[in-house]
Amino acid sequence: MEIKTVVVGSIHTNCYIVSEENSKEAIIIDPGDEAEKIIAAAEGLKVKAVVLTHGHWDHVTAAPIVAKHFNAPLCIHKNDEAMMTYSNQIKADRLLKAGDKFDIGHLSFVILHSPGHSAGCICLYDGKKTLFSGDTLFRGTWGRTDLPTSSETDMEKSLKKLLSLPADVVVYPGHGKKTTIGEEKNLI
Image 1 (cartoon, rainbow, N blue to C red):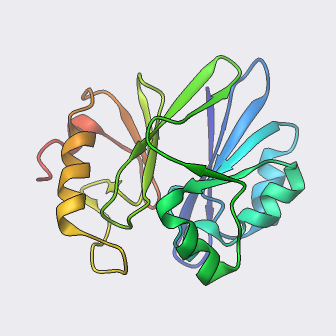
Image 2 (cartoon, rainbow, N blue to C red):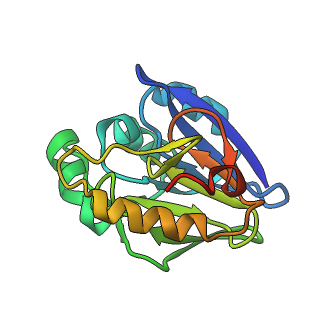
């Protein structure tokens, strides 16, 4: 697995380009801004999907441009579609739910629904050592719960679910540096 991190926008959102080395198949996670920069970083790859971890503007603004460029479906959890559509006039091609999968080459990622920061927050987990956590879990903290559709109660449940993953799982958050589940075990 190859993971390229492209930091974009005014609040430094991590956009991830995840590819399988042999097939060159890829997914792009959270293209929040600077579409040209993301497209350049993904050139030569067969982008199978653009996946949004939630519907906030800093994670979705460049999504329609990137999806159109690669002729890839734009995917978001069903609970955040309205937020994305309202604030950014963006329409999803595929609505996600917990348990949905994305396969790129021999790699597979499952959707973990992780509400709290928003009702439709998701994480992508390869079932082994890699988790893309969006704004659910950061290094040393978690996403805000004072926004529309946020919930402290849901966030606590989502964090417990994520922190039950193996300690050596590497966490790639929506902002900031990567971490591991083991490093974050004492959050709650």
